[in-house]
Length: 372
Image (cartoon, rainbow, N blue to C red; front, side):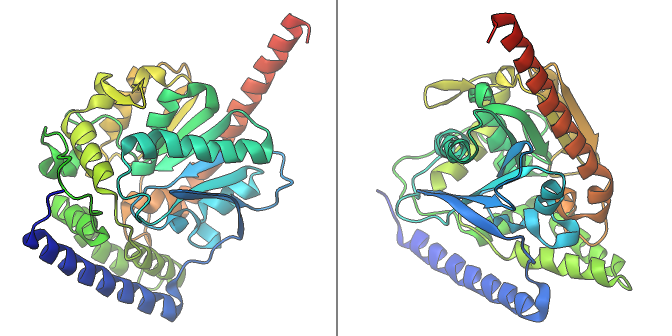
């Protein structure tokens, strides 16, 4: 495959920048601002991801698989006990599983959207089924993880009991927000290029370039807002540490997300084919719950509204998230913000329990009708 000296120099420079960011993150962790995680156990170690189970395996509530964004470490879902989405779910009786993406290596460097948005999530759900016996579970994702969850749910609605989408872009035609300046092209990925991963530092720089306020000034404003609030300041610094804990992205995945989704809006157009199936909103037949920030420049509220309006589900709702202090990035506030855990997460739990109850009653009715 084609590979130039210029690309080699750029790769070396980004590798050095990645190491610098890693050292900064380690320094924050050494000061006590690393994550305070809930205990977990691996239930499957697969090429590309590890499936984690959190909490007591004896829980009998609904099962949920979390799909993080394949950009940074997944502990943003479990940053510290007071604002841990994982702990909030466990306390509500949910059986929590998480698909922890592995760092890009020789076996994963050429994986693309068909792998991350279909095959690998399916394999993670196979592991959850082996653990719980459930054929259908809830699926939840934040940011790009929510996009991948929606793709999978549209391809395999029979496996998804309910879909929770948090601050995730779904509709891209005119709804791409700040990233439209970077990714609004229509060009097929070049298969002749050597599939070197897209460095995490490049992804961070691209985000800053797309929205300097979201990924720059708002972080400084948030830090100032935490003066005198020790707990909020600690959460802010833990999020800052997380922003430095980066993954590289497989180049085919990056190219396909930016071209097929941001550039051509294939999911909404019904032209996105993954592993021989079409991913489109019409396939989203399960209960849908979205959470979005009406002020966001990264994931416009209309991105979820447009997709949910086109979805085939009869049960769909979007909750507005109004922001927090002490979250560094409002984009992750829905996961780590105190207001989010006070106002949004109780509603998420209510939605899950209601959807679980509706399906159980429907199954009982079908059983009575068939005499089983």
